[in-house]
Length: 413
Image (cartoon, rainbow, N blue to C red; front, side, top):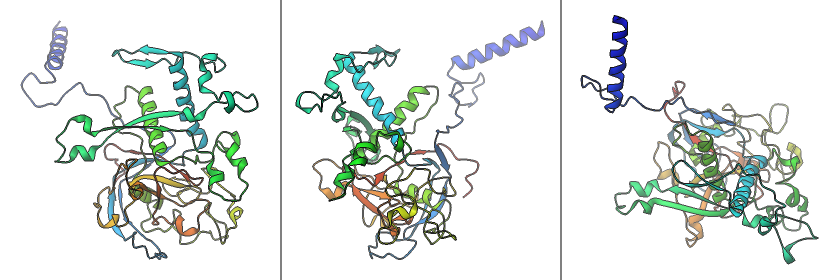
C-alpha cells in the first residue's frame, strides 16, 4: 500500500512539473523538460569533415602573379560533405520530382494537410499519355517526327532563402519580408554545353546522351549554373525534412564555402598542394592521380577523354573523391580578388546575391578543383578560380555540404 501511495505521488509530481511549463515543485532551475531528442544526423553519401585549422592560399608558385591567394591561417567548423560530386542520376531525381510536381498541379492532385495548407497529393499515379498533360510536351511545329517528347523548358522550380547578413545589419529596421528572397529557375541541365564549349568539334553524342543515358548515371552532372545548384540544395533539404518530420534539422543542404572546400580538399594535410598530399600529379609508378589535361592535351592518358565516374581514383584522407580534376565545383562564395585580406579567420566567407541588373563583375562565384579540360595548376588545393553564376559549362558541377550541429568528441584540432 505504501509503494502504491509513493508511486502515485511521483506521478502527480511529474504531471505538476509538465503542466507548469517544466518548473520544478520547489522552484529549482531545471530547464524545459519536454524537449525533442537530438542524436545528430548522418546523411547518405556524405562524410564528416572535423573542425580544424589550416593555411589557405597558394601552396606552390603563383605562376600568374595574381596575388589573390595569399596565405592565411583560418579555423573551420565541422561539416558534412558529399563524398563525390553530384551525379547525373542523383540530379535526375530532382528533375523528375519537378516534372511530376508540374504534372500533379496540372491534374489538380491536391490535398489539405493537418495545418490547413494545400499540398500536392503524391499518392495519385501519373499517366503521361493522358491528354490532360499534353501541354508538357512539344507540340505543333516543335514536335519532331511525330515523337512525344517532354518540353524541359518548362521545368521551373522556385527556391527560397533568408538574407541573414541583412537581418544582422544595424541598418535593417524594416519588415521581416525585407530579408526573405525567392528565385525561380529552369533546373534542366544545359546539354548543349558539349557543343557550345567547343568550336569546330564533334560532341553531339554527348549532347544527346550524357545526362539521360544509363551509361553516364554515375558521372558528374554538368551544364548546371550556380542558381541551379542552389535550387537542388533547397529541394534536397525539403525532401529530407518531408520524410523525417520527427528530426529537428534546422540546417540546410547547401554549397560549401570556398574555405570549407579547400579545407576538405587538403584531407587534413595542411599546405598540401594536392588532395593526395604529394607535390606531383603521378604516383611512384608513373600513374596519373586525377582526371585533367596532361601535358599539351593527351586527354585520354589519365583514363578519361572527358569526365569519368565520380568515385574514380583514390579518395583523400577524409574519404572525398575527385577533389582535384574531373569537374570544377561551384562554391557558395562570391569571388573577390583580395578576399583573403578581408575575411575573418573563423569560417571565412564572402556572400553576394547578385541581381540580374548588377554589373557582370558582381556575378562571379568561386569554383574550385580544376576539371578534365584544365592543366595541372588548377588542380592544386590552393588555386582560386571563378565563373559567372548564370553560366553553364561542360566542366563545372558541384557537391553539397551540411553544417554539423554541436562539437564532435573527435574534434580535438
